[in-house]
Amino acid sequence: MFVIKEIKAEQTYPLRLKVLKKNDKYQYKYQGDFDKSTKHLGIYNKDVLIGIVTIIPNEHPKLPKNAIQLRGMAVLPEYQKNGIGKLLIEEVEKRYSSKSIIWCNARDYAVGFYKSLKFTIFGEKFYIKNVCDHFVMYKRLNQL
Ligand SMILES: CC(C)(COP(=O)(O)OP(=O)(O)OC[C@H]1O[C@@H](n2cnc3c(N)ncnc32)[C@H](O)[C@@H]1OP(=O)(O)O)[C@@H](O)C(=O)NCCC(=O)NCCS
Image 1 (cartoon, rainbow, N blue to C red):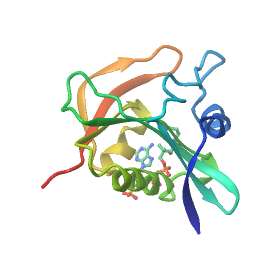
Image 2 (cartoon, helix red, strand yellow):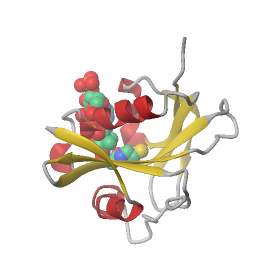
Image 3 (tube, rainbow, N blue to C red):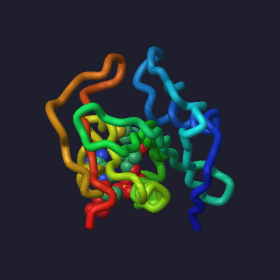
């Protein structure tokens, strides 16, 4: 059984490094990691942390207000494509149901994951230095 819990910023670092790092310049410590309003969720298989996501109440300048930004979404390679990432996003949507919008800078190769969870691409592809091409993707949360 998988359990989702709030974790500390430092607990996300090993997975960020293992799953998201592209090269030695990868900035695995994010601005806002220790802000009071930032939350980090971890999903556990028994006592093993197998997936993470960081939630920062950041507005996107061109998207509707009352937003949260997802960062550092990562699932251990041996657990990928088993619905773990989906469980994390569903938990975020449940916990942040009073927010209007959820958005992220999605790596180009993860776009299909977010699309499957009903996120939409916003704008053009852009490159983040030392990482890869990205798209802004978003989803409205409190749709009637
Ligand atoms: C992207 C990532 C977080 C997805 O987590 P996951 O646990 O593997 O995804 P899930 O198994 O919950 O997938 C949910 C759906 O998305 C699809 N999907 C998952 N990863 C995908 C990908 N890279 N491309 C296309 N579709 C994908 C799954 O097939 C599944 O579709 P279904 O519901 O039709 O069966 C994970 O694969 C990962 O950590 N990748 C490497 C790091 C990364 O890219 N992080 C995102 C940075 S923006």
